[in-house]
Length: 276
Ligand code: HPA
Image (cartoon, rainbow, N blue to C red; front, side, top):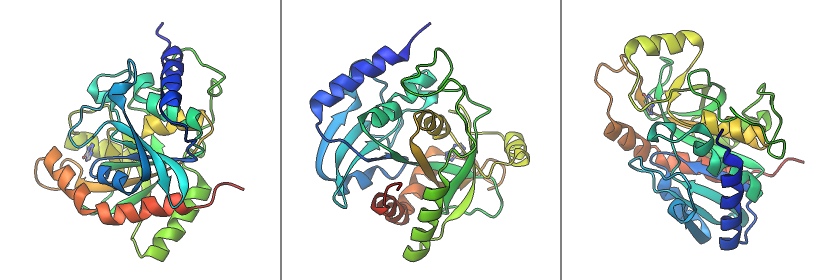
C-alpha cells in the first residue's frame, strides 16, 4: 500500500529549508482569486515543481505555488492554485499541500472555490459561505493507513466548517456590505460538468452548490484539527438550470468579476483574531 506520509515528511523538510516563517493562517486561492496573492507582503514563493514528487496544478487559471508572507502584519501562507482529483492524483496527493500547511503551523484555513449554483435562490456572481458539505461522491483523503501523528482514524465531521469562523465572517461581510449567502457544497470527481439529472439529484440530496474541489481539503484539514471555513463563488447556474452549456471560460470570467468582493472577505478572514 502506498504511504503518502513519507512523501509528506520529505516535502515538509524541503519546505522548512526554503522558508523560516511559521504561518498562522492558510488560504487556498481558487479559480479567479489567484491575483490576491499579489497583496502578500515580503512574499517567498515556493513553486510546487520545486518540491520532490509533489502534485502539480495543471488546471488553467491555477498557478501552482505556495506564497508565504504577511497580510495585515500576520504570517500567512497562500496556495496560488490548488491540485484537483480530476488531474489524476490520488486523494492523499491532492491534500498533501493542505497537510503541509498544517504541519508548517496553520491553525485556521480558508478554502475558496468556483462552484455551480443548484439552489434556485443563488445567482451568478453570488458569494456563498460554506456551512456544510457532501463528500459521498468522492473517495476519502483519509483512506488507507492512518497516521495518529496527523489525526484520529475516525475523525468527527459534525462541524467541518467552524461555527466561530462562520459567525465572524458573516459579521465581517455585513460590515463590509458584501452580500454573503449560505449553503451546502457538494464535491464531484469531475472533470466533466454534471448532467441535469445529476443536478436534480444533488439538489434533492441537500446540495446548494457543486464543484470539483474543497471537500477533500476540508476533511484533511479537520482530521489534523485545523479550524476551517470556505467560500464559494457561484460562477454559473448548474447544468440544466441556465439554459445553456457550461464552459470553463464562463466559470473563469464570472470568478474574475467577483474577485474584488471575494478579496475583501479573504482580507477579513486574515484580520480575524485567532481562537481564544
Ligand atoms: N459544476 C462543477 N464544478 C464547477 C461548476 C459546476 O457547475 N462551476 C464551477 N465549478
